[in-house]
Picture 1: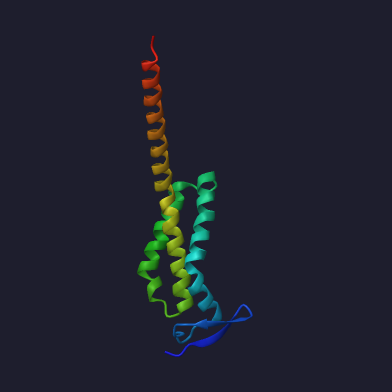
Picture 2 (picture 1 turned 180 degrees about the vertical axis):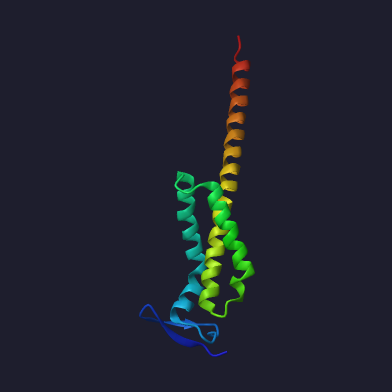
Length: 130
């Protein structure tokens, strides 16, 4: 495999992989940064979900539809750019779907922590009884 130099953002960068036929500079950039993009889309959506701008059932429905569409159609796109864009959409929505689960787990942990503190406080108060 021969490494080639590509101009990325005005500076040469050594690529260690073979460029797929039909790839564009935008497609290569998206492929390299797709996880980061999906993460930040999910963060913004999660904030909107927690604040209440987006409804939870609506967010979960949209997330399920996008993930299903990706597995049904998105992986068969001929264009690498379209496949990567679909992947970004599916991963970001899967991460957003985890937000209610994460909120439930954190709420449960907070309740357990408060219960433990209450038991400790009760034990201290009962020992101090004179």
